[in-house]
Length: 298
Image 1 (cartoon, one colour):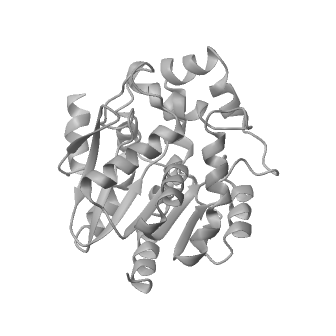
Image 2: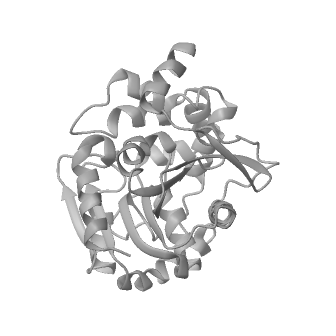
């Protein structure tokens, strides 16, 4: 653990900040100054996913990157203390934005960060100026897409808990398969899994999988459906989508759905890249983002 912490400082040399949301301590990064980029991670990652974005952009922008509750260096409460539902996630971001007085926000979104961020945006459109999205969703599972077997198993009672919280199979597998162009080196795979090294610390990893709504009976369906129905409002702001096509969940079916719903968006799709697009594309993805921001000044 000490060795891992020392390696972490090399890759993640940032000042940790903390605030209270939902009676829990949320860890976040707040680097640089200028126009605000609010970057939201997914599952099973944490703010570490955006480390290179922070390093390269903090000289020109103010970059705020929270760890969702249960993730990264934020608190990891049990179910009696925190709901782990999408509605709560959005409220957390609303609280963070209010506390930091963030305005004229550019959202940078990945995986679950996309659903959380877009739900936040549909409820607070006056705060949002631009959106950058990577391999994520803002709508229910497309009609053409089957629910992956791996996620079905991860949601199965008892078995899911054993796999995700007992064996850390979800985070372990993700660190191997979510990069397709460039496999993550061992040191980075370990750092992605660093905050999730016990049963209790993996609670959010499991709850995120369980919170995927597949029908109207699910508690998070209503908010996903609301967000889906209000995506049209993003036609009026610059919207960039960077996509890795070798993603076993957010694949061509999701990309096609985005292209149907937001045909005006700027698309960059890579046939050989996987889910962790910032790892697979590296500086190429950051260059696309930098160019997008320059072409669409506030």
